[in-house]
Image (tube, rainbow, N blue to C red; front, side, top):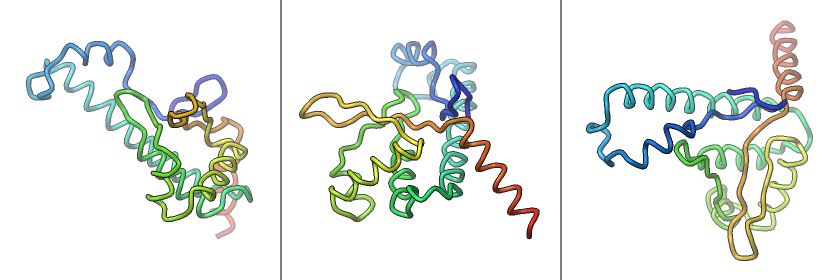
Length: 154
């Protein structure tokens, strides 16, 4: 994950590459070799960071982090688009995917925001919210420290 302004973020496709991507053909085999290799390496980093993000969220012992909240967060991580950085499923979609009611999703999203794993931006009355997945550096460090302490006890 990437540390920026006190938060750990999942790395996305850099802006310069995103702009170049718009000019390239859809067929990845026709991309320039150096671009294709860099894209593949960055995508592998993205995939690894998503796994690490979910792993740390699952280890968070905050009472706000219920099993349903962790499931919703894992779904949001899965929705994150590497190329655009967008993560904006509707609350109904989240509810359908994790098997609960929309009101439960609303509560869970509030808890994730309060627990520091998520930021949400409203994009209008009829549009879906835009979610930013990030965790405070201090929270991340505390979870890592707690995990080490638990490992030492075993």
